[in-house]
Amino acid sequence: MNILGYFQKVGKALMVPVATLPAAAILMGVGYWIDPNGWGANSALAAFLIKAGAAIIDNMSVLFAVGVAYGMSKDKDGAAALSGFVGFLVVTTLLSPGAVAQIQGIDPSAVPAAFGKINNQFVGILVGIVSAELYNRFSHVELHKALAFFSGKRLVPILTSFAGIFIAFILMYVWPTVYGGLVSFGEGIQGMGELGAGVYAFFNRLLIPVGLHHALNSVFWFDVAGINDIPNFLGGAKSIAEGTGVAGVTGMYQAGFFPIMMFGLPGAALAIYHCAKPENKEKVASIMLAAAFASFFTGVTEPLEFSFMFLAPGLYVLHALLTGISVYIAASMQWIAGFGFSAGLVDMVLSTRNPLAVNWYMLIVQGLVFSIIYYTVFRAAILKFNLATPGREEDDETSSDVQGSAETGVLARQYLKALGGHDNLTNIDACITRLRLTVKDGSQIDEKTLKALGAMGVVKLGTNNLQVILGPLAEIVAGEMKKVGTTEDLSDVKLP
Picture: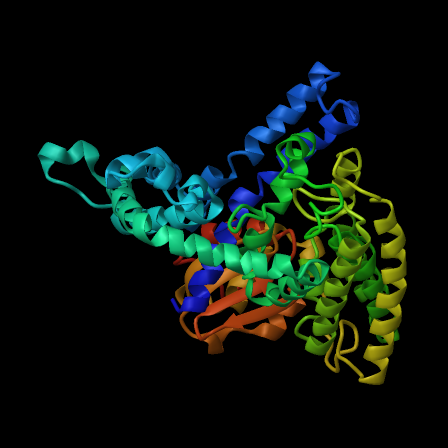
């Protein structure tokens, strides 16, 4: 696996701990709705819910260690997750300020400030990666009969604890420098203020095609470089009291996404529909309607973005630029709302009672303006440059009736056949919207058939890594593909 493919795998694994954030957002959001003034002081129920959500937010670092270890393990086994937890405890305990002072024989006041921030997502991700690699390598090792009880999966947490000692030893000398670099990077963007927020948002969109936006997000959304925008925003009153939350500032790396995801991209979807050929409009309408609704309601934008990302890359760069402008405007005007999952309607409603949500309703006004901008600019660009957006291809294969009517098991076999069968795949995985595959021979991939089956895009990463954008069905289809026997004959599977 090449470096890009490996980072793809890490980026996908990061979605496991990030998937816990909606629970925190709902709990804390409802708590703030119940007690908008006291934030738990005037209502036991509100306090209960806010504290429950904070339990997730305050432990994101260990969730990253556990989630990444689990997500990168070859068979998604709980032993890998346990190993991540063990490794994280070892590393963070050995690198706590008190332990560093004792081990190095120095005065506690002389311990570098970096060790006071050792319990962070960066360390969690690092430990999770190491734990997963140890699990993938040693989970089937058989020891001598005298030690047989510790063979296989039971061996991995033991090895991880020793690896944790080694990691802690290295980080004891390297972490202050690494931490300083991360802080400098974050401060560099922070120092640019509202403009920096816009620059971040621009690259956030540009990295989506290769799935590396999660790594960039962790710097600004979590406590990798001291910014910690999402947890600080969700912390609400607690963050204000602790000084980590500032009204009008905290949430600036999130707020400007709401106008884009709730209004801008649906406007683009309407433009794409209006520009489709008359004979294709019915098919394009079904695709765009579903994708626009997902973007507006939940903030899941990939089904819509991948529908034009590779057909009209210039249009996608324009989308990234408009996203950066939106985030810059929201940050400049201090129109703030935050999210636990993504910038859709659900998260906006939940964040409105958060004391750090400032003039959040203006994001709706901004969104309506961006909806018009997206529609106007997309339609003009598509028609002027004759861009091949969905419904405008010469030999259009934007959709078929297969995905809507066939059983998922049948659909999985169709995708499998179009990918060259089990013999051509060395790894089958999925995230929220994409199949993530490792192939032996890329020439066996039938992209035209994949799109006819309903795929919104096919992304090639190097010679052996492939992504097929399916939308919300991705994980279900991947699971069904794994169930298909490696010796099963696919010759009778009918393709569109």
